[in-house]
Amino acid sequence: VTKAFGELDLIQQIRSEQIRSQQIRASRSAGAGKRTRANSSVVLGIGDDCAILRPPCGHEILVTTDFSLEGRHFLRNIHPPESIGHRVLARGLSDLAAMGAKPLAAFLSLALPSEMPATRSARAWLARFFAGFNALARQYSVPLAGGDTSESPSPNILADIVLVGSAPAGRALRRAGSPICPARAGDALYVTGALGGSAAEFAALREKGRLASARTSPDKQKGINPHPHLYPQPRLAVGQALLCRKLATACIDLSDGLSTDLAHLCYESHLGAEIDAAALPIHPLAARAANADKENAPLALALHGGEDYELLFSARESARIPRAIAGVPITRVGRLTRGKAIELIDASGHPKPLIPRGWEHFRT
Ligand SMILES: [Mg+2]
Image (cartoon, rainbow, N blue to C red; front, side, top):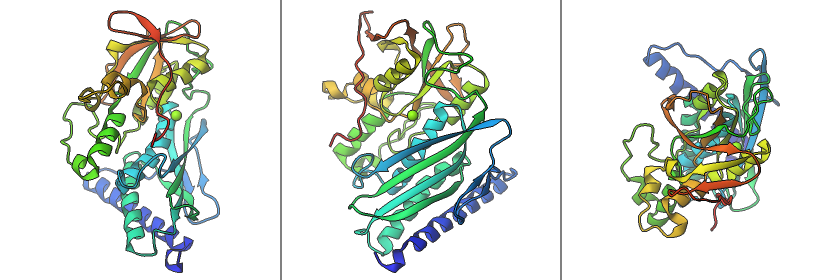
């Protein structure tokens, strides 16, 4: 790597991308006649040895970190750079959403291979990566407050995201439920949005190649994300509403697939569960998975597909859960039970064990 693409240069480029992003945000807010509200939690951002954050009074700090590795979490020949930038941030935001937290700041570490030369191609890739990253960051007012850059020792791009968020002290949603209001047998289980869309879209992308499927017509159905794989929407508003309104007893985000993430929630809560197969909200892209071999049947995609980044939560049987929160449909899909068994109830009412076999990154 030449000097032109040294660390300082990369940081400069990231910084100027950030400034450009802030300007876009400011001009959009001004255009809409809104007061520009900067995220006041960042006292000091990029440029010093550390960032300085000031969490809201009476809040606790939540921190999550996620790798996004080329070949494991994304493929350069399938995912456009904008999608990679979006997905890197969405993974972290989804973890904050699962705990009802508000994002305060993001920290991004990037390693680019030297085989991306010190030419326009690396710059162009980074610009598009940050276009995707910043668009999502603006949507949720999450400033990029720091990070690190390095030359990757492998031919792969490596990204690591750290998200810092906050929640009122003692109130963050947990897999085992809150200490004040823990999950218990008999609680109903709900999911946000629709399931299986990410795996279905990825399968389609892989089959047709990027260019063909980028032109698939977006689904007009209300509250349905037309690109659940390329541009998943972290459910921050839902998580925060569940926390504020004290609706959820336990919560997790669906990153690895319902079967696997439900097992995590049950394990932490020391409970079992029943899922009603007929009740699962299946994403139109998964429902359309036509010449379905067993692996790719709509139900299998919804149960095991993974990367939907929806929320799975439990609530008291008596709690009034709205049909939608912040425009996102909420569907009741089952209940928590005593014991350890996790079962899928099929359309004819027969239970069978629901084995966790969610997404384990790319099975290439
Ligand atoms: Mg998670």
